[in-house]
Image (cartoon, rainbow, N blue to C red; front, side, top):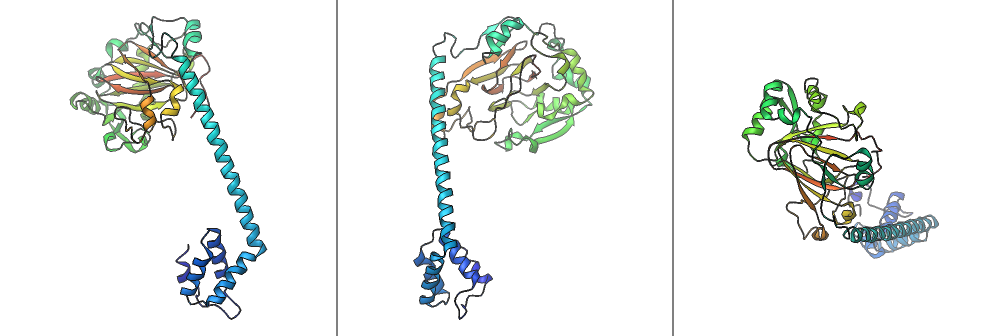
Length: 357
């Protein structure tokens, strides 16, 4: 009800009845389903004769244009209700289908585990894991990386200490630090950041992540010469825009999310705990916005998110020198158990662009 209308318009009726503005007001409030008696009472309180008030309300109700508007609104409302009901039915069917898939995947002897295997041929990698949307850890694939023996905080400070870098900063002040990462950008030298990482202890307050685009810096691009592409799986001609750098202290968290593409995550220094959840459990994860779950995996609120109780996560520790395939659509939560340095890749030789949100 538009209570400020009274102050904006003349209250007194004319001899011929209420003004068009008042008639519009009556029509608007009837469309809002305000009872006729309440509309009449308000008009009377504002000095309108009760007989005129009743007459004007009845006149609006009898107006063919008003009746047509009511009919159209009712029709559109019914369409929306029908659409909502159809969408609810479709969602229910999809959830039932996911439950079927989840039941079937539990029959596998490898259910709730991630295999650790030696270096795979391209055919085996593609057929057994990539094409079947199955995570896997490759254990002997980084032995020829100079970075594996060189990269550590002291090395970065010694060779790139004066280089200006960008980090995510003050993350612990914002529960949505990942979704709102644009609010947490901060520049400093690599040396200053290394000192924070080494001396600051366990924290999630600062982290150098792909969003900071530090590999775009001409100095840090030299680091790319200290890693070797995996030619069986990755496209070397597309390495610069599809390789991403992670460096932070013990305690950094990447909250529960899924990626819209396949990702190969290589652990160079320190260890990370990765918890993975099959896409067949998506309906249990409260994914309302983008690629993120609303649930804090480390401290779930089961009263607010009761379906999360049924989620089964796979937990693995990624050691230095190991690489994990995070398949498209698989949910994962990542926690650094040490000061950690990682590289991730998306430049696969196989299709890796999907319309998934």
